[in-house]
Image (cartoon, rainbow, N blue to C red; front, side):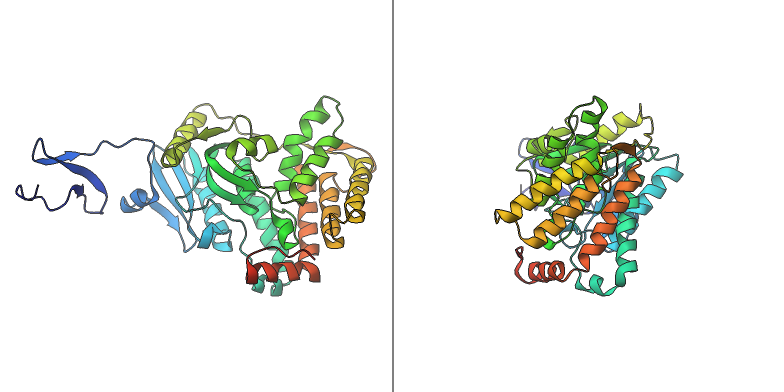
Length: 367
């Protein structure tokens, strides 16, 4: 190889990307055959495919009319900057006829560990906190009910708000090793980016539509969220409800973005925009049953009083605010209840203790 004037085994282009390898048979470089499913952020960046971006996220043109909203904040935490680029991705998708679909994904070690725990947020005042939460809620709704398909490519950890972004997609391509969960109770909060609403829509609506008892589904949701359950795989995430049974699971992590792009193009060819469906609010009787169960956990020393305080908020959200009668309600009702609960909880001293303890010790405080 050296005798033929080649100093490296791999041939790279002007951007540093591997495009070929040395062949002893020919004495020259041979073009590297690329699997079309292997798409990397580095490759898109080298091609100059970024169309918008900041320190926390970017939007790339993947080609063939597909956009990619990519995260690169620390541990891919959800920050105001990341949400800002999410809105830019939605705007580009909706306002430009050249784009037919959006993929949400990244090449980070984790998909997203959720919202960043910034102590300064506690000082921004109730109105500032509420506006940040509403901005994320509005974004997840804009993604789910966009006029063009949104596909999420999830891998490794998708926790808290990261889980809610996964559930905001019209379709998900998940690496088998995906660990998905709503873990906010660990810092004394509740999911407030549409996660509770989405679990009720997915698990309770089908039962209500056929007149079945919805209480077991509500109890399942409460247990899942109150215990900060994280799926051990993408398959288990389907069983829990974080993923749909129709979502695709892939074994090769390197194929994730390529498979997501392929799915996005397939959906774009047949896509009909969805209208926000009503969600079943099971009312005060179901709410009372959930409260009884919560009190039992406290009396059995399985939960602290603050755990119970948070769980009562969860019960209130899931049942639509303890309405006098069961009814089908707009999704916004559940989003409003999520937001109200979050704002109340973040002002509680015990929640603030949990947040600070997590920041200092990287593990939850049980208080």
